[in-house]
Image (cartoon, rainbow, N blue to C red; front, side, top):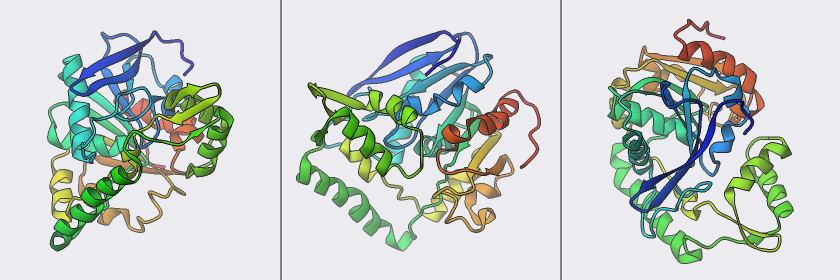
Length: 300
C-alpha cells in the first residue's frame, strides 16, 4: 500500500492470538477504523487510502482468520455478532472514545452493528457496497440457525478440518483468485492481497491462509431485529453502492429496507461493481473526503 503517511505494522492481542494491521498517519489525529470484506484483507484499501486526506489516523486491520491475523480457536462459530465484538476489542485496545468507521462488504455490516450497539462511539459511518438486508422470518429463525450456522459449520469441520486448505504455486493461486472473485480486479491488486493472505509451506508452495470457516459466516436476524438496529444508528452515515454490484441487484426498491428509513443515512449509487473502492477509487474518495470533513455532499 503506497502512501506518504507514516506507516506502522501493528499486532493487537486478543484472547485467541493477535489481530494484525497497519496504521497510516499520526496517532494524535482522529482515528478512522478501516475494515475489509470477507476473504479479503487490509490491502483491499490500497487504492482508496492514498486518495483520502492526511488529517486522520487510519487504522486498517485484518479480521480474524484473514490476512495475517490469527484464526479463531477451533470450535468457534463465526457470525456477525462475534466479528462486531472483535472490532470492539480493537477499539478498547486503542482506548478510543470516538472514531470514524470505514467498512467494505462484511466490514460495512460490522460497522452498522457497531454503530447500533455503541452509538456514542461512532462519529460517522462510511459503508461501501454493503447492506444487512438478508433476514429470516421469525417463524423460520430456529431452522435457519440450525441449518445455516450450526450444521454448515459442523459439516465444514468434518469434511476438511478448519485449518486445512489445498496447496498451490503462487501463480496458480493468483489465477484461482482472479477466476473466483466476483468482480474484475487488476492482477497487481490481486497480487498485493494474495501476498498478505497466503502462507508459504515449501518452495513455491502456498496455502490460503484464510480461515475455511469464512465460507459459512451467516446473517440470521429477523426483520424486526434489523428494524431495531436501523432505528438506533444515530451517526451520519454515508452508504456508497455499486450500480452493477451483486449487493444492489436484489434491491429493487432501496427505500423499503429498514436502514433506508433512517434519516441519518445518505445513499449514493455510482457506476461500478462490488469492488468500487478498488475499481472506482477516485470517485469513491470524492464522496468520502467531504463527508469526513463535514462538507455537504450532493447526491449523484
